[in-house]
View 1 (cartoon, rainbow, N blue to C red):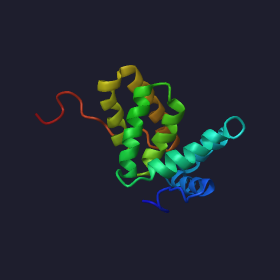
View 2: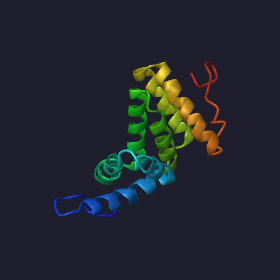
View 3: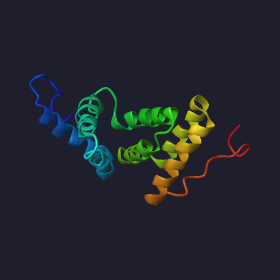
View 4: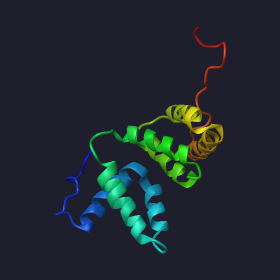
Length: 150
């Protein structure tokens, strides 16, 4: 997964940023870059840290595959609540790294047990927006009570 070695004391600030930018663009495409660019006139250091640290150092670690990292991220953003802008970026990212719309919906349904229905519903409505923009609606039919195997 890694394009360059993990950051070390010998790695410059700019090298860490460039590495993180490659990871961000591979995962989030244009959406991630727009979020970072939106911080440019108010908090460019936060944008730098998102790219260099969150994506370059943490996201690119070898312990989890990108799809697994996105599942964890979707669950955490849902649990936090109030993170709809970031959820939109990460639903797109989850699709970009190979999760299907059905898997994303299932993860958000599962989150209702641990996070509560209002947070899961808000996250699901964000996913619906992203799926609509990407032509992925309607999502596959889910089994109803009595229609599945016993």
